[in-house]
Image (tube, rainbow, N blue to C red; front, side, top):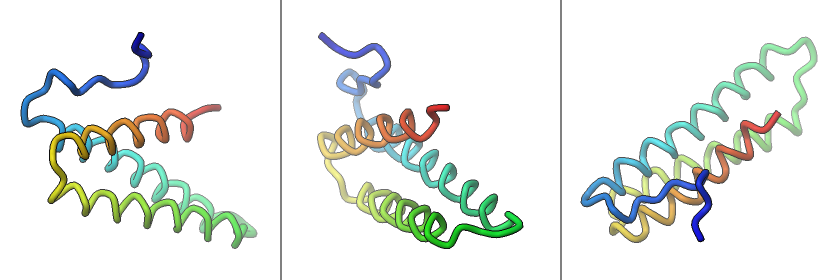
Length: 91
């Protein structure tokens, strides 16, 4: 049984890379927004900034990997980042 909140890219031909890139880009944007907000804080939390920067760097590395990923790898990355984005956006 599939999770209705988990994207299914199995029926997309050639779209896996594009979908994965969009999702990874959303995660990078989430990290960038949080980094900017933390830097503007009266007293920035340096440890949090370090964690946010590491998360963004990992997402950027995976984004670069998509350039040479096959459809299965792109679908795997998309699934991982869809779950991560869902987790990051939890209230």
